[in-house]
Image (tube, rainbow, N blue to C red; front, top):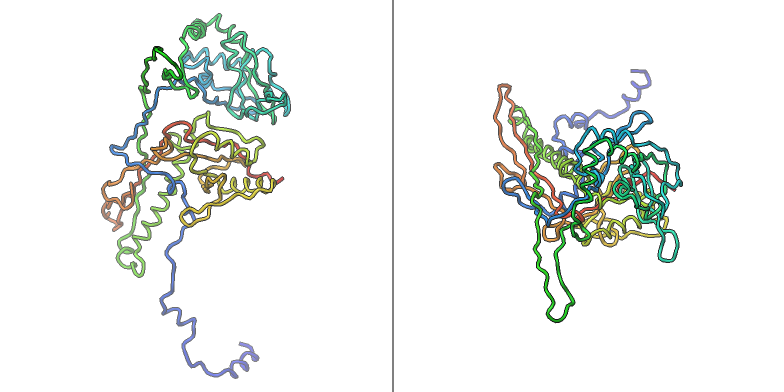
Length: 468
């Protein structure tokens, strides 16, 4: 201590009460319960109508539909070379159910890779359609003629799409629209001449293509469902048609998925450190929160039942200009009746807000349980950070109709399971081991089902980093 400090301390009055630093050692602090940054609003779990599933399986019975192979094609990339996976050619209607892997491999090798610049025309309306184009990467617009002769955009193709497939079975097919690249594209082209040349040497392919011409035309409605014969507007003694409604003989079944973990708590902690907060309860509370977060992630991303992976390809659309605009949201809404909600990553909601600002629009908000949620056309837009954002700064926006009565999207669960603490979530005591550690098995059962294809739609490849 310096001489100056000794003089200063000598001038202070003597301490007459306990100091705060010492007092804190004896005081009970005011504390919070354990916090967890992973917890989100989990709007999907709140807004989905949950259906009780006895037996662990839910079967979706539908009217019989005739599938025409309207999926997407998958590619592999090696350096700057792109190749189509041979089995993926079975997504083309002309090659659907064709199982000769050797011939499919040869067809894949005959696909010619092309690099197309933005603005380049791949096919012109009215020209002969003699090739099928497989879009490995990029965006292609379908350009048609409007009612007054002006140019209009009929649709957009994106990664994995194909067009011109009618060329493989119809030698007189013509392009009904102009296909023009919006961005730089990588396209694989398979010509009709190559297919016919291979068919001359491969009996399996020749017989398959010949069989396509002999298949009787199935009468369907615009959704691909087997037609129901009806008669209307007739007079007199007209013959009324006979009909019946055919069902899908192999309906899809959804089994409840499971998320589990074993929570371990040392008996010494459970015995001695339970005041003022029960340690076991707090450990369990945070474990359940993490389990529910994983549940919502699976409902969005799971390969078998996740919404993003199970959306019908006919209900997936592309943004007109990359960023999510009001026009894109209107297009998404127009694909289904009775849309109940949007789900979007917070960054996608911000990107949509920027597009509205550019147009001088102010999205409305709706009250959901005391929360003000942004909305478009009266349909709430709920944030969901489980929807992935790619390295290219693109994401997806989901729109859905919900409920069994509305033929929408539903959540699946089974309540009443042993040791249940929340609907379809149980905590089972597993015993105490030789290290005096108590174990609890925490389990959640869940799934989701899309009752009809148009109940769910996705706006894909939405750009979230555009600021101009």
